[in-house]
Picture 1 (cartoon, rainbow, N blue to C red):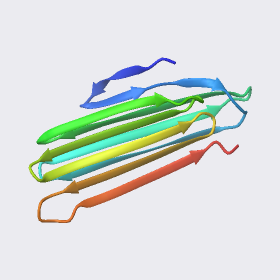
Picture 2: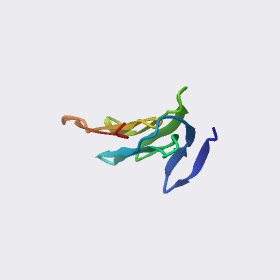
Picture 3: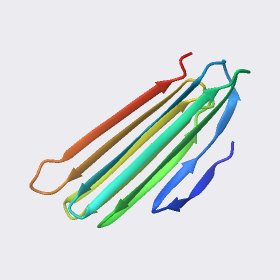
Picture 4: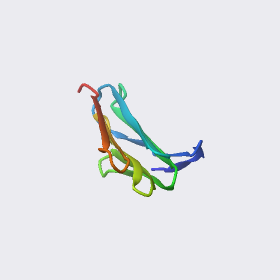
Length: 146
């Protein structure tokens, strides 16, 4: 399989890996999640999206893209996509920014099961000293209907 690193667009890096193998005839599934967190002068955002489909002849194709960015104070962002042994894809992006005790972070995990389903989850959290952390979780899933 071929892996490509797409050039950063507005400080958001994306990784895309296509996969194609044989499976049962059946349909398509798409899905994805994204999230942002901000506190003080910090912010962090991540996104993950994927799709899989099965053609009339039983051939399948899958794709997954994920990325993230952070701004303010000290920042960290990283993304990667791995192929599973059975033609699926797993992707993950993390982004965090902190300035003293103030921080923002976002984490997205996306799974594509070739010819079967797409699942994605994004968790975000931000915090300023003296206040409660603000947390959020977004989850989505889709199957090909086989």
